[in-house]
Amino acid sequence: MLPTVPRTRLNPGDRPAIDTPFGPLLFTTVIGSTALPPLPDELFELPGGCMVARWTRPEARVELLLTPYDPGLDLENWGPLTDCQSAVWRIDAHAPLLRVRFSACLPERLPENADVGWDGGQSLAAITVDDDSTKLTLGGMDEEAICWAAGAEVPGRWAELIDDVYDRSHSTWGVDFSHHHGMTWTLPPLEPGDHCELPVVAAWAPVTDETANTWYAVLASSTDLLRQATDRIPGAASRPGHPAERAQPRSPR
Image (cartoon, rainbow, N blue to C red; front, side):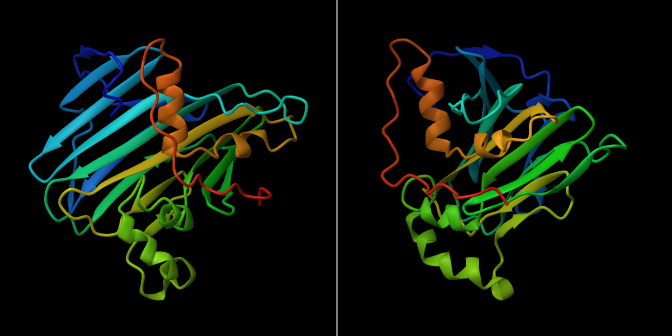
């Protein structure tokens, strides 16, 4: 991921995570029935506060980019964010993969006064957590957005799965938030040579801010995140734009 960006190899001594006010946001990949180990095989530090973790298996290569993200919200309409951090998860299949799951989860035990709920909208899978001081929104692509990304961020044939989005009775893939402290993406089958990229964004602000700033802040595609990570580095080549950017939701909730 980001092959044009210089990097420094690190010793993988810690599990890749995003620190949030509600605890670490942790990431898990399961291929078939086997979860990849918490520590990656390789870990790289990139300029601009970015990090790339890599797991290599005979059947697939998995990479996870952790990077700050500036959603560019208009402060005349939205309150300022306390922070916004993001991840791009990528899998490159070397063999047929019938079942792949990727999870982004906060700690199971949130503070007693924390309230968490589903906060998704058109093209966005999201949860929002708030307590007496902070609101945090965690977001990524929903099933419809995954189909729209076909041919760029996900395999082109996944566009044909759009009917599954509206009829879940026979679907074997999608986004699950039943544990309430995070989300799990179960992918359609992958073939050798396929790749899939999924964005995850966490944005938080004071709970007294009544604007939907954290919700709108997480409306990023993996293309958005990779482009910004590259563009903040002088001399690095920008990634080509997405041929059909994701449609933006009209309203949060």
